[in-house]
Image (cartoon, rainbow, N blue to C red; front, top):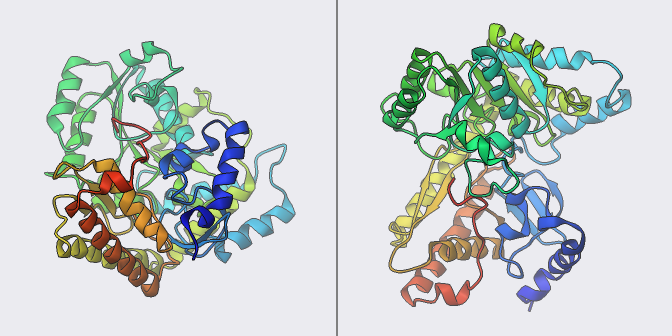
Length: 432
């Protein structure tokens, strides 16, 4: 019989070694050991294909994390991989710009409503930071009003509790408003009359906009002479090919895309109106790998495939809808509606766990995650659906969730959640 210690033996050993050389043992906090239960869950991955991943111990999982959203077609998908291989023979980085930059920029203008020009980068943080800088240059103002999560740049991280090393003076320039509360944004515009350069926000994560919220935000922002920036790093190419802006019919002045843009290759972009984007000629936005061609080739291939085959996104939505409906039904079946809910859109259903009956919500959340991983489901608070997920994968996940909820229900009834899950992950940000 395989024990937990043997199942994750190499993972734990790798973790011990990584502690000697890697701060946080990861380059991405949300992927790191700190977001899983050390000793009871896999911590490091070895390979991936389609919708499967293998950990360093050789355990196989149906993956619903998707590299934290970049995977849209599936791991090692030939559409993306063949484009990368072909470009690799021609070169990766050159002494001058490459035609791929123009080709991908033109492609983005065809599928994204707000895109008249495009500027490339590598991470979501690069894109959101660039958009904020462009907005400040264009409006000649400095105050930024924000809602949601926007990456690792100083301008945003100062609004979080994890802001060590960030100049505190930035707090005077960045202010947060509440999603679906137009009144909270109105108060900030009144407080900083004629001083706000931009509103930057995620058009949606897990909550749907209510009462024409996005449209009202746009109207209020323009009324006050500011620019509207949509952070579509997560929603882009997933809510629709043109992002949440196309899905909801609200076009911002600037928008940031990344994640699913190249099915796992590192690339992001800022797109927007030509008169605003041309401000980049006065703004320093420059990086050695902004025009790196393997990622541009991957983006071109991935977006073109989705553009030419609308069935890709239709499939993702259909699989996600089946999973989301099933999870909601299971929560009700096991009488756990006061503990859990499955919200958001079908391509990325999000699990919310709630404090109830005196239980520790983080322990409940971690125990559910453990029960899924024990059954071969790679999961972390949301379900990232890709084109490689088929009916059997969704059905397998629902059967696993059924058993996980059943065990969780019994743990709660016998008041043994904290006993089983003494150590549990802490959120990367407590106030996001």
